[in-house]
Amino acid sequence: MAKKLVLSYGHGADTANKAHSKFVMNKGKMYEEHTFNAKVGVKTKKIVEAHGITVLEVQPPNGSDVPLRTRTNKANSWGADLYYSIHANAGASSAKGVCAFYWSTSKSGKKLAELYAKFAKEAGLPLYHNGSYASVKGTWNDFHELRETAMTAVLTENGFMTNSEDFKRIFENAGNFHDVIAEIHAKVILSFFGVKYDPDKSGVKPTISKPSKPATSKPTEKPKKDIHRVKVDGKQVGAFGDEKNVIDAVEKALKGGAKKVNVEEV
Ligand SMILES: [Zn+2]
Image (cartoon, rainbow, N blue to C red; front, top):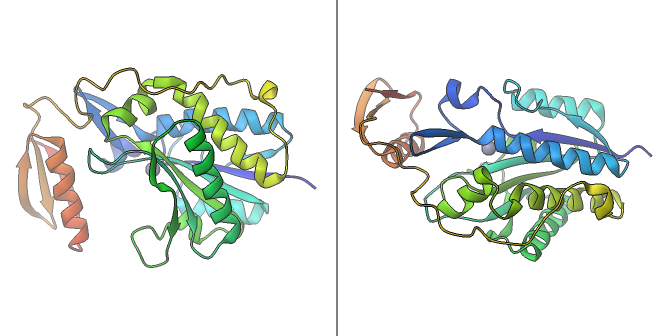
């Protein structure tokens, strides 16, 4: 039986600039979520392919963003056995750790998410929400990729871009994180297919370690001179020098049911 895996790398190379989301600023530099998702995804793909798994990438690494509907349709029509999505999280600067989401009614999804948490814990990574999280219809975590997939599906959030410790892992590969996390993904995937993981086939060198020192500045900091104006449904709600305040204002607007939110540099 062919073992068919779909890998979905969160967002696209154009997401940060086009949608003004899925990135963090650090010392005036933009760090995009997709670059990390793609890097880890490609590593994961190599490992599982070396173990005989057939992989379909529904988002090309570093290509333009493929809509979620297109991704899940492709997975469904291809007849994938497993849908595996790779992301990095964003939130309050205190929130940190890795976590896998599964559709709340999927037993096999839950099992895989818990396995992800187990491997992550063994690798010494901090866990968010105990490392696994049920995705529930009609809530903030009613994720399309988990809801619209006909097969077992997992959506992994591999740390918070907005946390200084996680940032070092995600964007600076602290503790050889990219290999560590790719190996965790591969182990979860191979376990689903009942294939024994062989480290000699992996081509990665995961090491168990934590970032050597805390980041010297918070990931969300920007030079003071960059002021961003936030408009909600055409009305200005504020102009902020601190990226964090911009994000907070956008979040508040979205929670308040805003139809259109604009962020522009003044
Ligand atoms: Zn994402």
